[in-house]
Image 1 (cartoon, rainbow, N blue to C red):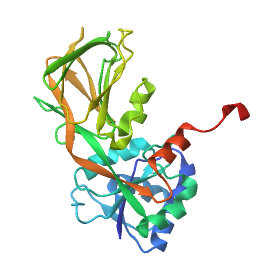
Image 2 (cartoon, rainbow, N blue to C red):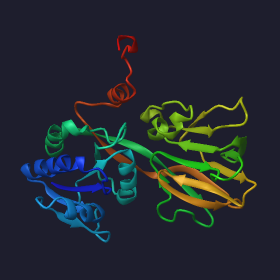
Image 3 (cartoon, rainbow, N blue to C red):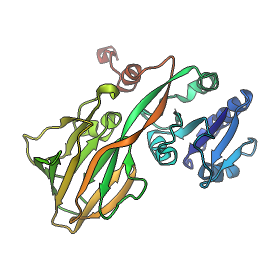
Length: 293
């Protein structure tokens, strides 16, 4: 089995023993290990007792790599989505961060998780993505997001007005700091912190969540993921910000763009001892009576 590993450089050396444990367990199970060149540049200066192949940007991973494994938090896994794209390669994340909805494997479960992965004791959880289209193009070929696409005012700017159109029909104008267009996957991320609902992944929905709206009667709205959304933005400034997950671009306010479901999905690995609901309960502490603490 060919397993590729992706991760950002780590500032805290406390993670090094866990990284070593990942490589030791993969080697124990006879996996062919391929490390993304960015992580390789970090490992070669911090760990010299591991053996692997280096995955270069020019390498064609589709049909070659069996599984992608990320080391870090949810942000690391989101970064890696631009590498996998529409290849269909299954992904699993080991959480070295904080909450970890996407990178759901705890550091204490590395050994059992890798054993399950190499023995194919898992199911695939397919997640929809969003794409953003504009002229001129803003994000090039990386114009898709697993969590959300967000329109946001610049830090030094006044609030913006976002006019939203649903399948060509005017929906609403939002005055505030911006608006989040979130997938079901992203409903537990930025959208949730702005008061948006949690959407079950199989519900075929997306959510439009305003950020600090000036209209007190404005609320998040859940929409079918088959719709096409178009946006016009008014601002006192000449530009504003648009982000696809962790990638952000400055947009001229004259640009009009559309957001709709992307034409491919991301396959998240779910080990047989976990489910989406168990992840919600564990991460959000559901079912725990706080009065006992």
